[in-house]
Image 1: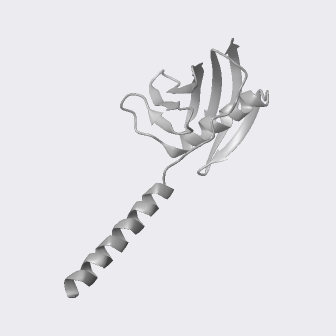
Image 2: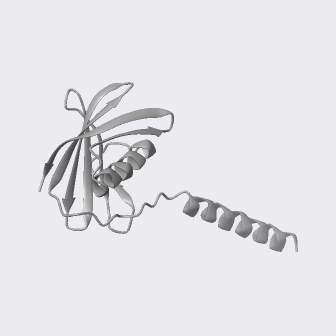
Length: 132
């Protein structure tokens, strides 16, 4: 009887942990944007100037963020199912995922400048160039 109760408790704990981790998965909507090859953004943060390149290939959106020296800070792909995947070995940063989605909204609504507060960090974003 005691083993049966321990087995049930273990199952309940296991399923609770599984449900918790399923809820932690970030999923974003993949917007329907006008077709473009790539867009370059200039981003100003407290830590300095950054460049963000967004390209649209097939149904996916590729994001590459570089610091002022050209060192990659983030390389991610937003798949058509709304999930981000890393490109290469750079660690994912949740704030950048949110920034990338907001940048897609800028493209969708033709905003050339915008300012975002994500995880207590200010991002001043402006479109530098669009390649169609």
